[in-house]
Amino acid sequence: MDVNTIINLIIQIVSGAAGGGITSALLKQAAMQMLPKLIAGALGGIGGGQVLGGVLGSMLGGDAAGGMDIGNIIAQVISSGVGGGVLTALAGAVLGGKR
Image 1 (cartoon, rainbow, N blue to C red):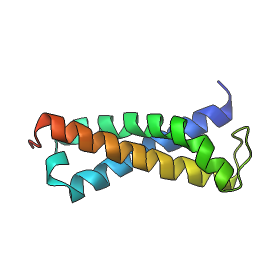
Image 2: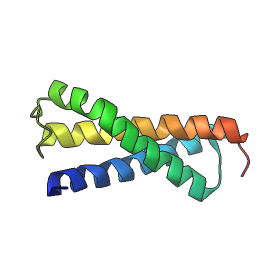
Image 3: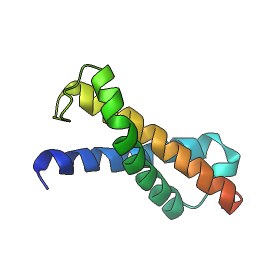
Image 4: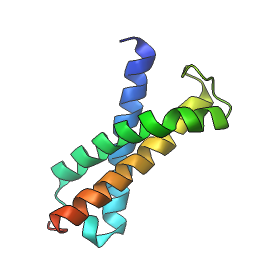
């Protein structure tokens, strides 16, 4: 693994966990304990960053190879936050929103 890949994974995990936390705060059915919320957000962030990161990166003027420029970083943050929020909402709905 090169340095760019590791940095992208860290951005995806942190953004996904943040997106999961925001979603959990906004939606009552996604209210879970802290650890499942962070795990669901981080996993959703990795998935969202991998699936949508390249598409958004090229739309925001990033380099197609996934280098470390501002367009790709913003795309990773947005796509990972959305992915983390979506997976946290789904996990909260499945778990029944118990705290």
